[in-house]
Length: 388
Image (cartoon, rainbow, N blue to C red; front, side):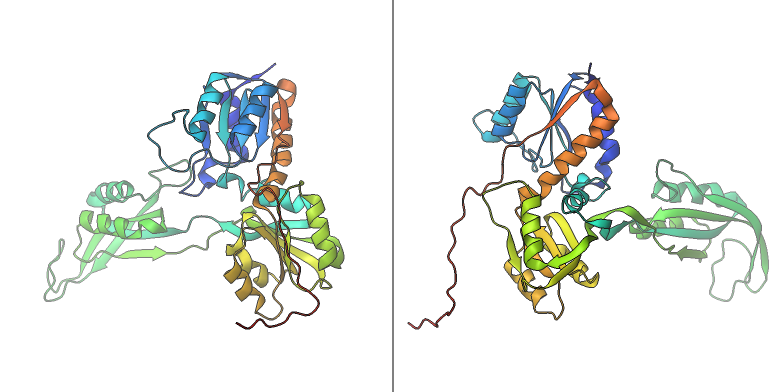
């Protein structure tokens, strides 16, 4: 039994919507015919040659990776380059490649949530919840005869779009009244006389980043010299299941030293280092984390009163400045590959539930962390000043 690549990708997109990807990212299907049959799926972090060779040797029809093959445009996929060879190997052996990168970072069953589950956290929730894109609610009043023109202009500028719908809005009828004063140039009415006009009230929702464009289109289409325009800012809703990082609690508090060992044991074996900053005896109960590069959330972890923050690729200066603040969470830096690998099992299991016994799914065990060994020096019990 099998499924088409199109069907499998639809399930992946439902789990990890491409719209959630960062604008600089490259997610989706890189290689593959949507109508091709898929019976075997391999999950991995990196689309490198060793993983591709594993997929071919195992007989996979689809390789799903977290990291993209290309993040920048190219003019050649010649097999003389490492990435070009990956493309040639995939196509020659009928293996499709699909990437779920930043679109898999923030949602439920995503990278950070998978890491939280691997560390045994409970009461898991986003550390920095995603908020709906901010919107404005527009209200204006226009003579009946010009309402269609103004509505069309606002729609053309991007107003009235909501999810999978556009050209939406609301209108009602009433009577507007005003008196033009000396110096006015009224489209309707006379200087010094009160004018009553049959008007249409127009209401629309619009993305806040289009405010200036919509306002310009409205003024260009509106017949009044000084149209009345009200712009309201509704409070944006939060998605309780989606957001950057995660925060949760341990079933039983432990020391930082004990927790660091538990973190190392929960992640796959690697040749890199798990680094710890903080008092080894500090008690850890509330844990904040981010799968992948996460020093941008150090402040969120502190604001949430976490006892420790776990992430990868943490830089010297942000961590140093973070630790200077009294009461700041301890920090644990884990290898990027190892942290994100926890997502593979979660994603593979959920996709398997959705596809049933129509496919066979496996997770690559190849360590693609780029660091291959660790050389260390230990401080002595007494560190002396060195003078030149």
